[in-house]
Length: 216
Image (tube, rainbow, N blue to C red):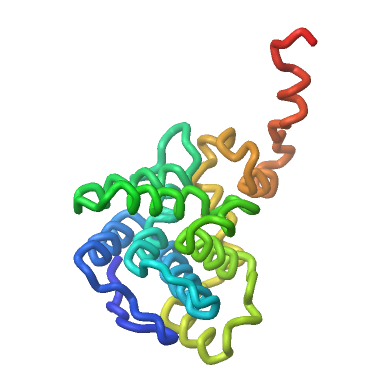
């Protein structure tokens, strides 16, 4: 898969550093056009939210986090037993280690990716974590849709088309963890399993308590 390099969309500059370009190459190599477009939209939406809220954040780290945030769904990066968010976070951390980034930045990117589906927590973390959570929420569920101008909305989806996103994103999610549905316990991706698998039996937290080995 190859794409034309876009320098700026809706007033947001796409990072053009060595790290950013290498990350993009990995997404193009191991991902799909569908995930690529989603990931770039997430970065732009996250950045627009950052500008609107006047938050200070690192655009390059936010970009790398956006690029890797769904790579855990792909066969190349998917583990047999970890949440896909953790797979993507681990991949990004290893990638950035090769560039000698300090531990605090490695941890920040790890958290940004690992927590991007964690409702009620991510939005209270560092700006990069909170912003990507907001960007994902905007692209996937339309959260904050009203804050986008018509012009920005049109420019973004023209550059990075949604391509029947509503119908394709749920099967795309499921394809990344259908071999390890147990990893969706306690998180929103259990809803994806329930949607895709007839009579899916969710693991239940209360059952875990009541059937623990403790006698009392």
